Length: 158
Image (cartoon, rainbow, N blue to C red; front, side, top):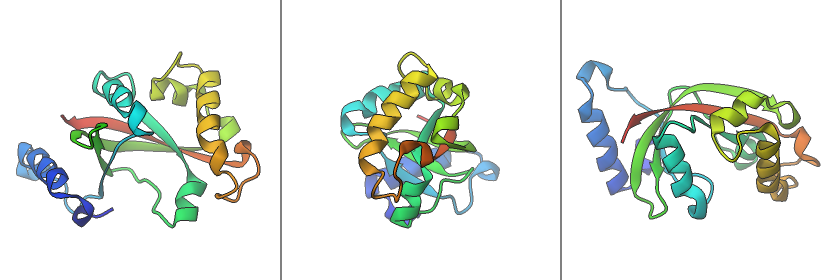
């Protein structure tokens, strides 16, 4: 996503972040997106987990990006996290990326995602329920064939 894809409110929020930084630390030509996490019903809960530092990562499926023709996340990307009212609430920066087959995701990912009881079993159950309806669209037969891309984030502005 390019900066031109941001609406006026999102662009103003981004500009406040940029101008809060010393000029020498301002990113040049950043890749910035704006969206809520998961769905609107749970996005405020996820936002809170990021803001209190319990959630430092989020996972997606590589085949989803590929089937949609979208770029894969990259270290250094920025994400304007929108709350359930689609208002900018914080800015996250991708600081690391890990790839795993679904059935090989380590417990460290579940811990970093900060949800539920923090167990790998909980992570697999929730993500299976989330992703299973889309497997055919992504050209997959079973969830264990899916490639999980986990982005590790740092809150850089609130």
